[in-house]
Length: 302
Image 1 (cartoon, rainbow, N blue to C red):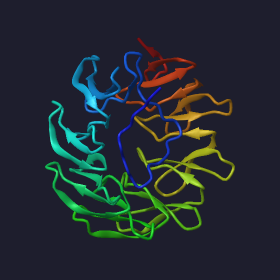
Image 2 (image 1 turned 180 degrees about the vertical axis):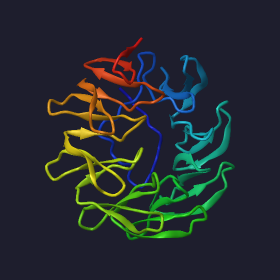
Image 3 (image 1 turned 30 degrees about the horizontal axis):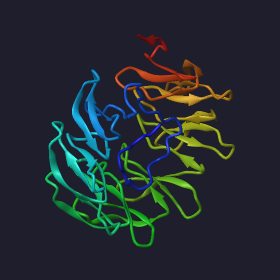
Image 4 (image 1 turned 60 degrees about the horizontal axis):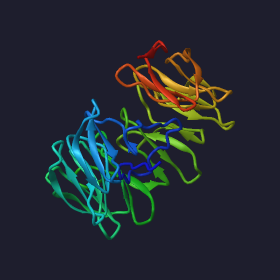
């Protein structure tokens, strides 16, 4: 099945171990709902948008489309160029980019046809020149970028380098901290001054969400640390996802998914083949070819 996704060139998006996308049988492919709308691929192979009732509110006429963010969505025209539309389907930023990311904190990363990345505002004005090999979305006023030497650092909204490009990899800031990877392949967390505040000994880690971040130990098992770097939930899971609405999805030794609370207690048993984060009090879960939504007690929502 064809699946289109928003074109993002974030500074290496963290590979979420438990991702799913919304799918229905009414469309060739469908994205997640963002700001009340989801992109879909119609019978003509083109993309448009539906609302939560399933009604087409923006006709399927683009080669590809991204999620709405801050009222705008990136779409690709028949010539392969990207621009942005509003929720009425009106083109508000002309098609001129090789790739286009989502808006965050008023700015979106774009890539020109020389393969270099910069940032535009909601009027389409370039506010940070396209001079970076990779550009990530803004978070906490900072964005991760990659320089000509393939090193990662962070810039502010004027384009000024605020944290030098010295890391092998980096991710956006979340809850005041950002993950970085050094030349030895080890992960640490830095604050907004660039200071390393948690020296990670793990081979892999997630971002902080609700005060905790998942980590993977040398045996490949997952647990959670707090902002002091201390393990608060032991590494005993085959996989784990960040906390959302007080619960985190985990995978047990049998390959089944369930949910734990911040004490590490299993509050929804691991009985599912796949499971997604909780959003608005519900989460999508899958067994075989069947999917449904559950509430925070694990009860199936009709």
